Length: 173
Ligand SMILES: [Zn+2]
Figure 1 (cartoon, protein in one colour):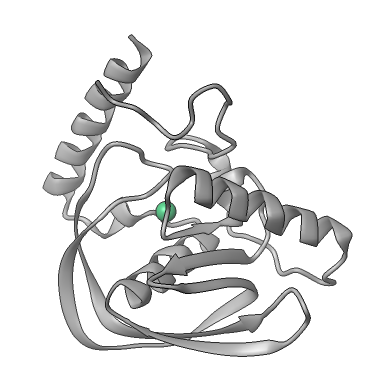
Figure 2 (cartoon, protein in one colour; figure 1 turned 90 degrees about the vertical axis):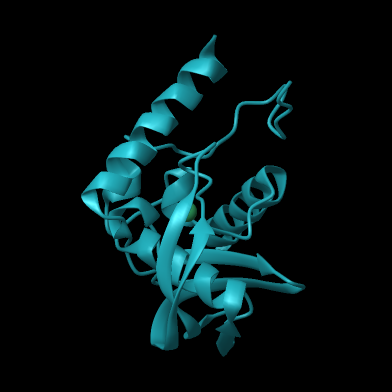
C-alpha cells in the first residue's frame, strides 16, 4: 500500500503537463501581503509533500520565488539569481514534486551559490554543496520553465515518462 502525504486534501502542486510549469516566472516587484501569502502557501505545500525545495510555478504562481529545506537550511528566496554553479559534475538520483513517483540520475554541479531577497527584504547569499547545491539548481530551473527531465538523454527521458504514466495510472485506479 502506498500512503501519500496528501490524503484528504487536494494537493496544490501542479504536475507534468500543466502549462504553469513551463512558463518563465516573473520578477517580484514588491514584497507585499499577497507575496507573503504566496510564500506561506508555497512552504505549506513543500512541507506537506516532504520536498527539499519548491518553486512558485509549482503551485501555479508564475513569480520568481523558491523555498529550500535541506539539512536544516530553510530559506525562502524572492527573485533568486544563480551566481555560480561550480565544482565537479555529479550524477545523483533526483525527483520532483511535480513529477511524483519517479526519479532519475541527473548530472549537476556539486556546488552552487544563489542570491536573493528574504521576506524581510534582506538580500542574502546561500552557498550550498551536495544536496543543497542540487536543490538550488533544480528550483532555479523551475523559474525558467525547465524540469529535471529536460536534463536527461532522450532515451532516459522516454523511459522516465513511461514509468510516470504507469505510476499515474496506478494512482488513479
Ligand atoms: Zn521540481
